[in-house]
Length: 161
Image (cartoon, rainbow, N blue to C red; front, side, top):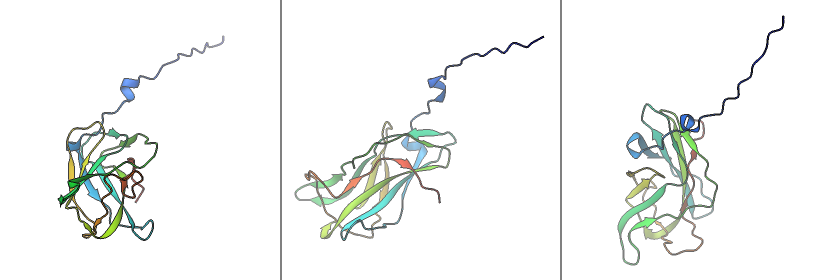
């Protein structure tokens, strides 16, 4: 007697696999130390978002990053960074896991020094803030530049430590 093998195709349930978007109240924000210089005036560091909730969640896209500081006579106290060109991919954050977004800025002697980095995440209400960490390094404001040297990169998984 031969046993019959029965195959049943099961379609994945997209609703079961979908993770909720990470909410600001379930994340913490920190920064890496200012690091490599892209050239003589460009400085990079990472904005680090860590999932502090007991549930996994997902991020995708670019954070909205505002540098907030003294009132600039021409541009005001808020400098919203433009986005670097890229193709953002979903980033799943398990509890305790982190994602990063690279902040690149042009240093300018005697320029504008922000006090605060304010971050809003894609598809998440609320805002996270940390102090400007670049040791008082002034930023070249390029509010109207078509090819600015100051920008924010897409969210991506944090590199292994």
